[in-house]
Length: 130
Image 1 (tube, rainbow, N blue to C red):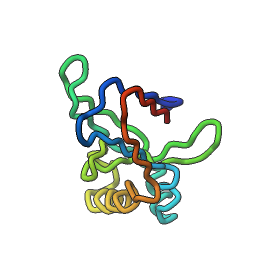
Image 2 (cartoon, rainbow, N blue to C red):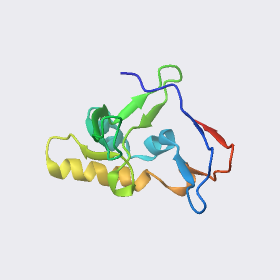
Image 3 (tube, rainbow, N blue to C red):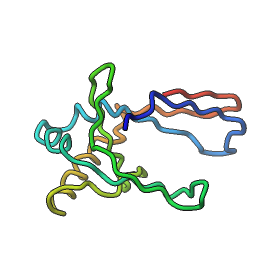
């Protein structure tokens, strides 16, 4: 399956405090990984879980490749958002648990770094597209 072309969010009523959204450049995260890590992740999948109930009040769990290549630009993005950092990736499917844990640690080192992140502060009527 192809990832969506983009997403759009509209703020109707902002949170009274907090509520900012952090967007992370997954292409920069991928480029920051060591070449051997990129090579290995490009061959693997990972489990992504959303613990926000869907329409049927069940959590959503899916499996995705660890890396996605944009069909038009050819750029590769890291498709792992470590659960430990507030993301959705709960497990990388590697040959053994030690390798999976080490790969997740490598992803944690680059995901959410300030130089790859944009903070969006919501106001009534704000629109974010990515």
